[in-house]
Image (cartoon, rainbow, N blue to C red):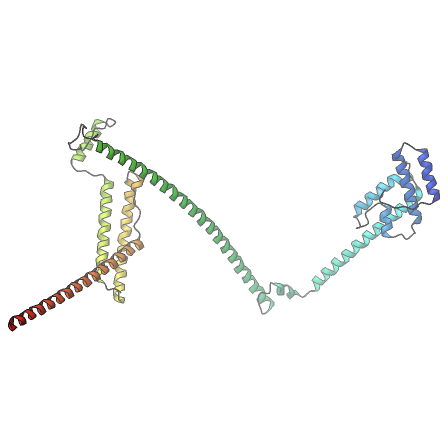
Length: 387
């Protein structure tokens, strides 16, 4: 009620003062009567064709923006409870309620007018869209393509397919980069842990070796029971049955070796022979190689690759029977083996060149020495003749 500014005449002032004398303690009733008088004075000043702002003030609605139909209806019901003649409220007034009802109709008419305007605008937009040329939609495809509308549509479809493919590839690249970064972090962590274990093991071994050397220097190992005696080939195992013990002793006495030791020895010897054979082939070829020599070298490399594949199968068999995982072997790599052979060949050729240069230097020195000796001999002979 305090948001409104009302101008009262002398009669209204006298009525208010009389009300204050009549109800000195009932403030709520006094405020209701005061509001009724204010609204009555405001309605008396309104014309039959009142404006929207006056109607909103009469309904006690904000003037900044027109409210929705539900808010207007709620305000009308609230005012009807206060000023309707049949409400039984002390502020009931038929004349004031008629003005409130008229203001309610004005606000509703304004809302209906706004709604019809918005609907007309939407209908006009739909009509414009409906009457637009059918090929207009193909001209807005991000400016891609040229030619007829169907050709531009096909070009735009291909453009979208290419863009989607690029986005998928970019997403996959990001995932691969992330996985590679995580794998690199795991490898780095494993390397650090392994190096730390190796450092600890080396430190323990050095400490044990130092203790052994100190004990030997003090002579602690001189009075041992087995000093000066040969080591026994086979010691008794109290946890093995006598049959197994005797079988193991017989096998050791006859030079038996486990299968994994024999397989490892065979693998080492085979790979050494293969490397030596390929190295000899490379030495026979020129440097740089001719076209025919390159073809010959590729044939030998292919044969070496086949032999290396068979050898890797033996490595797999060896890894299955070896007792400890730390003793397992890795596969031989073709590119790495070829690179080693080429490096060894280059080193061998450099050594041969250095050897040739050394021999030439020695021959030159020998020639110079012989020439100097012959000169000295000639000079001595001439001196002997002059005498």
